[in-house]
Amino acid sequence: MSENNTNNGLDEDFDDDDELAKIREQRMKQLKEESKLKQSFLSTHGELKEIDEQDFLKEVTGTDNVVVHFYHSDFQRCKILDKSLEILAKTHLGTKFLKVNAEKAQFFTGKLGIRILPTLVFFSNGIAVDRCVGFEEFGGIDSFKIEQLAIRISKAGVLDFKHTTGLKIISKQDVKNNKFKEDD
Image (cartoon, rainbow, N blue to C red):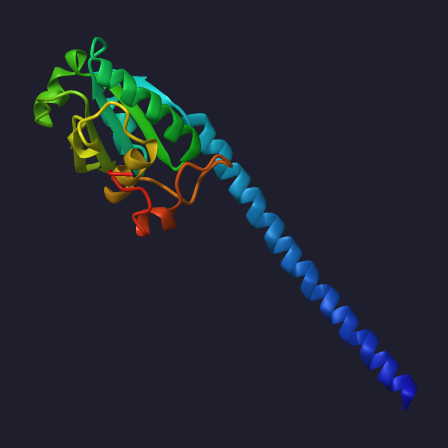
C-alpha cells in the first residue's frame, strides 16, 4: 500500500510539472508579445515627432491615442511645452506625441479652429476629443509641473498608462487621486 501511495504522489508531481510548464510557456509567449509590441511602439512612438500638413491625417488616424502640439517656432511657451511633451513621449509609449508648425498647416489649423498658440489637440481613434489652449489650465505660468500636463492629457483619455517605460512621471492612480494640483 505504501508503494501505491508513493506512485500516486509521483504522478501528482508530474501533473504539477506539466501544469507549471504550460503556465511558464504561456507567460513566455505573453512576454514575447509584449516585447514585440514595445519594439513596435519604439519604432513609431517615444519621441515628440514633427510632422507636416501632408502627414497629419496618416499620423493622427494611424494610432489610438495621439497628442498634437500646434506651435509657432518663435513662441517661448511653445518651446517650454515641447520640452515637457518630449519627456512624456519617452515615458508613455502607447500615446503618440506630434507637433505641427501652425503657420505651415493652415488647413488643419483652420479646420480645428486653432487661434491661440500653443494648442494641444487630443485624438482618440482619429477623432479630436479635447484640447488644451495656451497655459491657462496650468495657472498661466511658464513654470508649470510636468505632472499637471500629464494629468491634463490623461483627463482627455489619451495618455496610455499600459505601455510605459521604466521612467515614471505619473501613475494612473496619481491621476485618480488628483495627486498633483495646480496650486502645489
